[in-house]
Length: 104
Image (cartoon, rainbow, N blue to C red; front, top):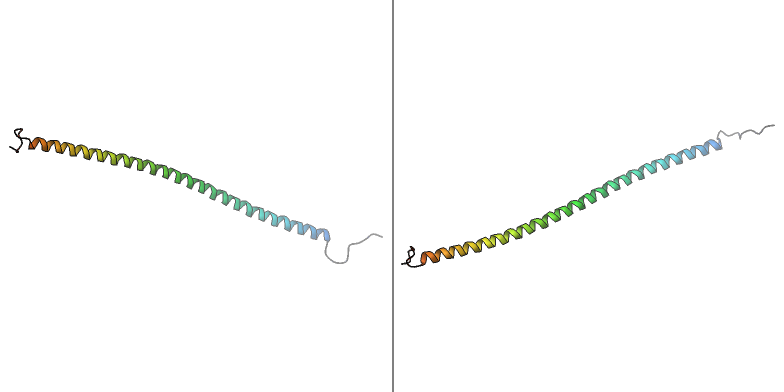
């Protein structure tokens, strides 16, 4: 006589296969989610690096602009001093007696 399956309608192998399939499906979904999160984190890290590079470039440009500003301020100061000297020299010439000035 051959042995037959139990009278209930459940097949233990089919149940185990179904559980395995659900577990594999859940693991796949979790892997997809983790992959998406890793991609998002990578994009955020890339954006942060770009932002840091932008900040560094802006800081360098600001330093250069401040250097040019100092140079221009020095040039303005030098030009002002030269104009003062020229004005003083002209006043001295105009105030000198007998040199065509009105200081006679």
